[in-house]
Amino acid sequence: MSETDTAKPEMSASSEAMIQIQGMHKWYGEFHVLKDINLNVAKGERIVICGPSGSGKSTMIRCINRLEEHQQGKIIVEGTELTDDVKHIDQIRREVGMVFQHFNLFPHLTVLENCILALIWVRKMSRRDAEEIGMKFLGKVKIPEQARKYPGQLSGGQQQRVAIARSLCMNPSIMLFDEPTSALDPEMIKEVLDTMIQLAESGMTMLCVTHEMGFAKTVANRVIFMDGGEIIEENEPEAFFSNPQHDRTKLFLSQIM
Amino acid sequence: MNVQKQPGPDLAPPASSVGVIGWLRKNLFSSAPNTVLTLVAAYLIYITLVPAFQWAFLNADWVGDSREACDSGGACWVFVAVRFDQFMYGFYPEAEYWRINLAFGLLIALMVPLFIEKFSRKGMLAAFILIVYPVIAYYLFSGGAFGLVHVETSLWGGLSLTLVLAGVGIVAALPIGIVLALGRRSGMPIVRAVSVVFIEFWRGVPLITVLFMSSVMLPLFLPEGTHFDKLLRAMIGIVMFQSAYMAEVVRGGLQAIPKGQYEAAQALGLSYWKTMGLIVLPQALKLVIPGIVNTFIALFKDTTLVLIIGLFDLLATIQSAFSDPNWLGYSVEGYVFAAATFWIFCFSMSRYSQALERKLHTGHAR
Image (cartoon, rainbow over all chains, first blue to last red; front, side, top):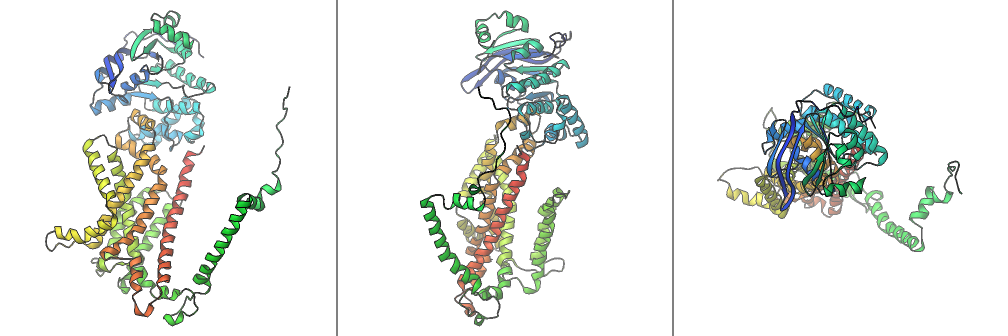
């Protein structure tokens, strides 16, 4: 893991709000799954969201790129409000990249084709330009030699790194991570976390749902604890881990640390 | 303490468990009941297949002009040989056979490059085959232009008619089926309702009634004097019917694609149709190749039902030959020939689908 000092550059003074969530509520039928979520994410901020299963963490970040719909409240991403308007949704999805717990690579395409598919079909690039960008990002996640292989031939850690490269190829300004290492065995978790730390160091705005507290301590500007669909506590990592305020936070931390 | 210092050597398996002897022991003679079953099966094969083989090949007559040539007591393939042209072309005028030959020859020639690995313009070739070739084939078959004599569709028959019906049916049913399957899974209520009604209606009626209604009842509803070609009516009926079945086969494949695939595509900003065309359908269709080819094979055989409306496909042509006074009593040869022809086509489709599955599987190599 990198040194604590170099992994956390100062937040820019202008702190442009990349994501603003105001009074967001979500229901699955009758079930009130997200209650009064208020969150502002500034440019370059790295936020780790933790909490027990079913607390709504994944649902909340999936609302940001409209994989889930919220019924009440506002979500504003880079100045564009997220509504039913398809144009707004497409615009936001182009700026927001997502990495999933189960990778969700396209198994019928090679690793490189996975990365350049959206560049060719959404950004309308030529194949050659797209391949150049694809290889650049595969290099950044340190697996350029796997470009012609199929996802099924790669290990879990390599697949997740391809997934990260695939999202990065679209040049997003925000990256969402939904438990990216939860489906990996311990040997591979490190290589994925290293990639994410490297990404953080480059100044990417990141929202990360994870149980990897070491990662939170290394890289996060803020840690948010959610339970029962609400944000219970949020704080800087040192304060969060050493001095949790709420009882539920204390209970959660005592169980996982 | 037990520590194995070096990996153990690779030994050869015992002789009696591999090779032909091993296979026989394991599969045919592994226990007393199995041995008995093997012997009984061998006996049944002997008493059924051997006489059949003798009848069909060893004692059969292959050459000749009339029934006098059939005197060996076996199958009289002379019957098939003499009437072969009719079985192939129906009532198509003999002078114009070359047009049918040209049409099918052209199709085969166009399709050969699709099977060559290195051929690069497969997309364009496929588009040509699907869009331009049918027009060429239509004019070759029907004529009436470019100096070709017009041949009415009621004269088309035999294997060439079966292939036309099956070909059109197969090529049309798959895309329509895909659209219906997507429609049935759509979030838009009207699209979904229309797809469901279409699928359930066409699946609920037997093909025979569809053909019958199209041929007998449709003219009652049309204004006086409109002539809606009978073959065209039959084709439309077959295509509607089979695309409903195809829709459900494709829907099964669509259901099997994990939601994560849709989500990853959405997160990358792909639109609905790009997600379907690039991500979901390639995977879904590959999954249901067995079901799709099954539907194609069923379609091929269902074309025989056009007999009901007076179109003479291969089977109907052969059956009509039974009433020829010169060739009475050779219906067995006729039916065996029909069965063999159908079997060749259906089995070829089946083998091709297996080869296709093997080839596409390389994308998922683990």
